Length: 195
Image (tube, rainbow, N blue to C red; front, side, top):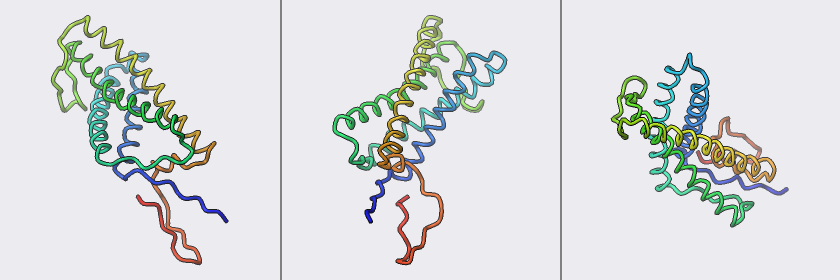
């Protein structure tokens, strides 16, 4: 009976950063798209959105630092050379967007003359001059970057799901956590994956 070698996993801290980033980005995008269409809740959602944006910036910087110290595991053999290059450049574009989006948002709020507050506790310094024209340009850029982020995240998720479900190569398992008990066989205890 043939055995399938389980895929190598990212380090635990890499996986934590990955899923934390995913949750924060999903929340930021959802709140961002909601607040511009719901005037009654705009002020509250804007505060939450700015706070999440600040967290995204911190988490992504820490994630990049972690990435320079811990290289990702090898791809499954189903990933060809050309696809590998596309994945690398898509990942770089995603990191660039994840850095640019909160910075542009911070600059946009600064240009509006409104202080950036993180969870109503920490006040961030302005990083752009108070200027209506600058605000308008940055607001447009923030919207464009949000849509670009949606596209690149959708491409990332689609690729991983296609590999995991259609090709069955376990690509998603590289980033998941093992939850459950160790299974016991007649030959003894099976090793759990390395978390």
